[in-house]
Length: 203
Length: 236
Image (cartoon, rainbow over all chains, first blue to last red; front, top):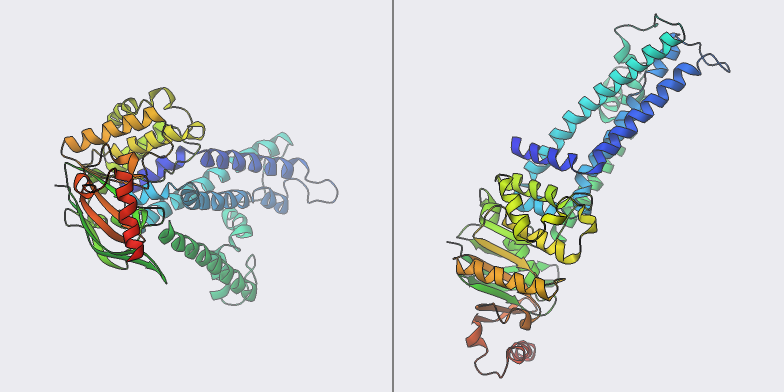
């Protein structure tokens, strides 16, 4: 299994997708933080350093999670597009193992990617706030919980919590909407998987 | 070691029967040609042999085992199919991935790139490779695990006369060293000089099998023998 993950890693670093994804994420995170700090307080937006402003500035998870979604799709679907999936399955005919290796690698990478992006965005924000003379930010340990749900509520886990949790919690979708989101996720993934499976036979 | 066996191999896609009860052997130390017009079932049979497609009934095995049950398949069988490369990988990167998949060291990568005359372009993106260069890269990748069985689908497609010459010499040498070679072609003239045996397919069915010399005994030349065999089949 480790070898399969190493193979997937080598595939990932030898195509531009990973580098482009990293560049886009860093660029958009920086942009979002810069805009959030420098434009705060103008035209009726919350003042710089206020809790609302800081939370908005630091909600950079949106960018990295979307980019990782695209990267994940490329890592799997790209093999079919370029027909390298044939070499992959010739070398490891147990296809489930290949898919498991891809999934584990991308999950680990996604987690690392999210953490690094957040660290970068946070560091940049602290510097920029300091430049505006704001040294004390109105956030504390609870920051991660405040930052994540803006995107997380749309992901299967967030939607799942909204459906299964008691009543409607702040930061989560209404249960009805969340159920629809879950159905949409499941349908999209099933359609994708079916398409791939159908093609496997025909090639 | 290295015998390929087809036993009653059948593949149908609903009403369309792509391969119809194919039975035949491919022996080590010989070059065997899968011959037949386009759509006769050559590629489908090879894909089933390589575990890429499943058979409806029957079996295709290598040394008695289906491909999917081989522990390190690319160490046993090298396959050259319609080549698939990521356009933004270099030839060397592609080879290094193949080496990792086969569990062999990168040292072999350089040797094979050199053998296929690809060293000069090894660090360029495959996007810029000619069809012939892609074919050679595909063969180099198939050989990375040092297999003793080679399965090639239309290996002469896209090769220039020099490339054809090199490929023929290589395959003859591979079989001469005891390896098994199964290659497909829709042109008998392409393989007449190198193939020892032939399995001739038409519309999914085996119409003739055996040493090429015997198959063509009563015919003035190979191509007309091939056409006669196929036309007999159509009339019957």
